[in-house]
Image (cartoon, rainbow, N blue to C red):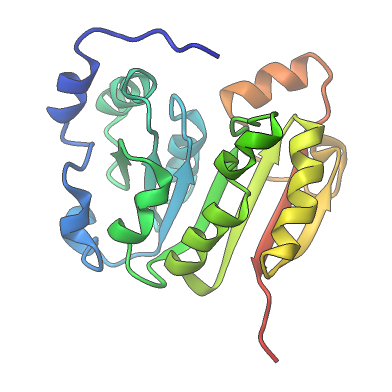
Length: 215
């Protein structure tokens, strides 16, 4: 999908107090950014920010980092946050592969992957956020009992993930092919895409995974 570039988005983002420039400087010291040492949760590919900001409202005792590589998309979240000014939300405009340079080992309590680009062609499989390459990054930043939560409407991507996650040394705690009609629906926070797909009657798949315990 071709994204429409918004002129001036990069500058606008760089000027926002809610976007962390040079985030590598805070690796292991994110308390300096948030003003507290509360747990950190990360959403990768956060889009316009609806999901992460709703979580932040519901959970003021948690700090949230939203990661979005496209500046024109992130700008929408920045505009929303500048209206609401949630104190426990900050944004990063970076590639998720860099997260181990930005977060120290164990610094992230949870990672959310919502409606990620499916990269349907086999030659692009390594770009999928549930591929072994990305799971290796999550392994480096997650707390010992940290989890990855993944939601998608794309059945092919979900089937791929059900295989790739265990093969990379992770354990799937639970999974469902129809989240909204499952026991896991209670408390679910929807993204913009999820609201659209749900209105169309499309089933939403979800899995939660943690690293496999070593014997």
